[in-house]
Amino acid sequence: MIKTGISAWTEKTLVESGWYPMGARSAEARLRYYASRFPIVENDGTYYALPSARQAELWSERTPDGFTMNVKRRLPCQRALPPRDAVDRGELNAKSQRRRGAKRRGE
Image (spheres, rainbow, N blue to C red):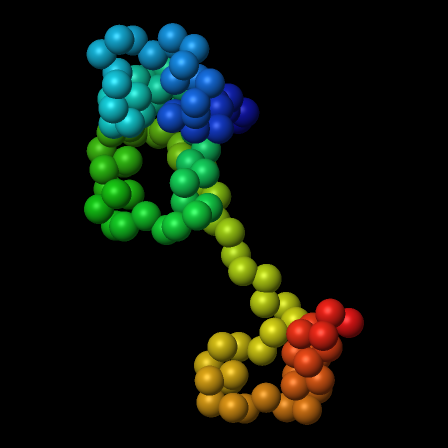
């Protein structure tokens, strides 16, 4: 199944376009209206910070059963870095220490 929607129910150009009815002024009202017209939306706010459990519950309550909310999540790139707890405990091996030193020097 292919679902079609847009990138965010609060996207500036959508809000300014006049697509929402006059009574849909809050993000809550816009989500309810959007979800009544489209089956899916992308939530890019989650890219910047994880929502609280309560916020996720509210999104669920404001959308119909079967509605899909795709969430973005930025994962920090840690491929070249050792686990943070190992750094805190000073448990870096010589290879990790050399790699970190090269990154700091811009090599």
